[in-house]
View (tube, rainbow, N blue to C red):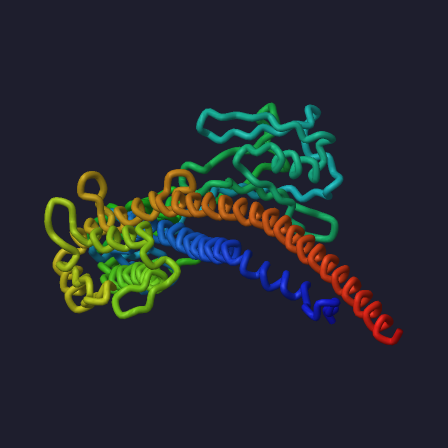
Length: 437
């Protein structure tokens, strides 16, 4: 509880109240600083959204991201893969042969510890394409031969197959498939290894398209069988089976992609409207901020196609509330009429940048940490916050000095009043004594 001094006044309370009046300018500075910090937080949120949006726009601006076609096969063992260069079509694929690797099975059984090479303890691998390699088998045992072949990285793989108690036969398989995968494995002098071998020749895959056209491949994959379309057979594809393969335009995927992007644009516009106080909304933290409003205007202006035209041709329009509206019926018709032209409206480069490209560049320029308009606005307001902080610190010093001054003045006044009161009391006592005498 504050003490009441001889004057009957609570001077400490008087000083506190005076200091509250003195501190009003400081409080105003604090309010301004808090307001600036709130705006900075909102601008940082906008910057984060712009970075995410830039990534989404850049993805849509990439032609490879547009799934113009969808591929199907009536046989799951006949897989089909398409690239953006493919055009609509269908094929009837009859499997006549699958690709297999060349194999050698050696006739003489041996224990893993039996020496099976000649005195050189080496074996000769001839790939029959002019490549000959002598492989050192160490101690020449069957297990060493298998390990040496596998460690040589020569394009073949060896295995010891158990054919009886303690006995094994050597099986060597080409790593590649196709008729050109043949090889031989002998002693270094050309003599038979392990009693000689029986070959299962490698074979190319072969398919018929049912029109007198037969196609072969060293592997089970027929790359670019037609431009942009590759087909792969499973190893266990049934010989003589026919698969119907189709690759058709898929407008539904493109339409869903465009709709999702329009929603992302609206999400960004809604955030800006909420923070600036768009049409029919109360003022937000960025009300009057030229950076946010300018960004909104740029996004809406991006619908105008350079050189004339508008995305309204695709059913994308601006509403009276500053948002985008997609007419899916109109978009579907545009995709059906010319899907390539629709894609170009989003992905085009050069002077006629596509819409997604323009928005990606716009978002990147605004959120650039060094030169971006939003980043620059943040730095400017951070400078204001720093300046206000220094002013508040100066006021703290000023107010502390003022409080000390007031405290001294009221303390001196109390001392003087106490002295006068004591003197008055003494005079009153003297007068009382005189009256009694």
